[in-house]
Image (tube, rainbow, N blue to C red; front, top):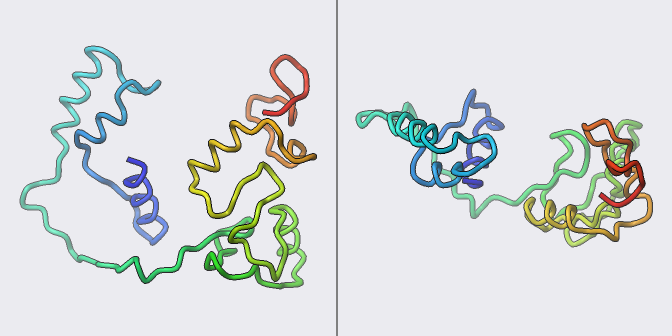
Length: 172
């Protein structure tokens, strides 16, 4: 399912208005038991309704595009907007623009240095890890670098940065 979600997201980033994949057993297994999914008889009714949504048997595509992704270089963002992206093996570009410098400072990366194989000083995220690995590492890591909490975004719950629900301070 994660791969399907990625493909749908990539289609939108490439200019599509929507990215959709018809639901199937993989979809239903992924959704079963999730907090916002229907439960019990409501689940059974929902799956029955969803099974009526496959593509038409005679559906045709306006155009087919094949891309040999083995020839694509993985890209990584180094800044705070989608335009700040480089091939994963390249060095971060050099610019004297104040907004550019501010973005690099925020991301804690240096111009002229490669990102591949380097550690970010905030929350131990490795550039070469998959997003799920970065998430797991950031959630499980109790020994974060000094100042990490001060750079992390505030929680939406209204708690101050680094503050726990009991009012104390600590690693999140």
